[in-house]
Length: 409
Image (cartoon, rainbow, N blue to C red; front, side, top):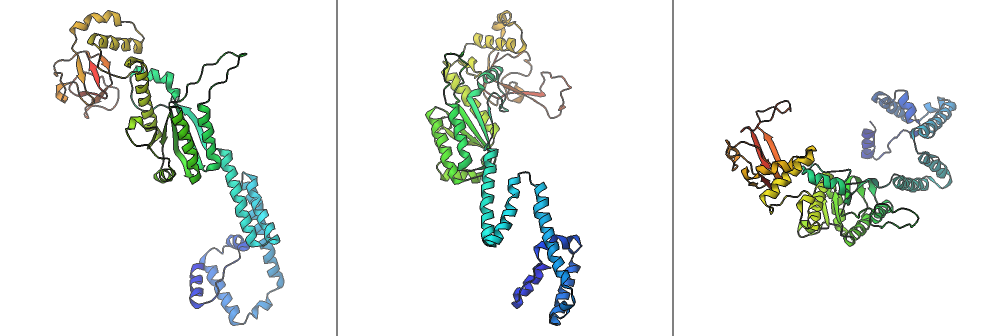
């Protein structure tokens, strides 16, 4: 109804009629929220206007005075008393009395501007209290969903702290984003020595730092300088910086400020962006395993990375040692004598074992396969049950395919 009356008033060059805010809740409580009371009020106003407002003289002045008092009490009850119990942070409640008081002292417009300024300070203080870092973690706690060998899993369980994860939250601006720089700086600070206390085990410097932006609601342009400082610290300490969960809008803001992924070969990039945290953690684990393999004089069994430059007998011994380690037994030495009766099979990633699925082994040559290196995946036929109640047999209904390069005997 208000929109229609405003449109008509604008068309005829008249003034629109807007009810006072102070009595809106009271009128709504009395049932004036429907259309009939509004049309009736227009009828009364038209009647008073046609009679030159002579009928208003018959209304007692107490009615108008009481209406003003009711409006005052309603405003105090709604905006002062009820709001006190609805607001957890009481400092936010002070805004209403301050704006009302300043409206009488310096004017309504100046009071509104003052309220906006106070609201901004309260909002910034709330962000600073909650912090920009949701939590800190490492590769020891958060692992990717990538399937790995037992040796690689054990190595990551012992050295996963070389991957540090910082999960960010809230709106990022220069005031709270500087705390991220403090967290990163502390990761590369050496431990102070104290001659009176026993030396604690040194914490390794991180090789990969992952910043997760999944919980970030927005970002100020001044925050780009903080991320550039973090990038510089990581580059100076031989550490790679991975970023995950960045929406396109935030990524464009960072790119305009100079914080963007590097070009060149992916394995040599110090700054990279990923869609989610799991992908970033998985790539950091992959690179960390490869890096440590190189540092360990190309010994793949120290990190569980498969290569094929070992003799067949050594590969067979490695497979037996993995079985002993996984099941807690000691039969490797006793089974080495069957090595002359074994045949070596090399599979590339994605290939199958048996010829019925495109492999090199005849379907009739069923036996025991010892996985010397790599990871295998067993795929059941679609006609088989999805539950684990059935037994798994070596039949053409199963496809054995290599997830990584594998050596078999």
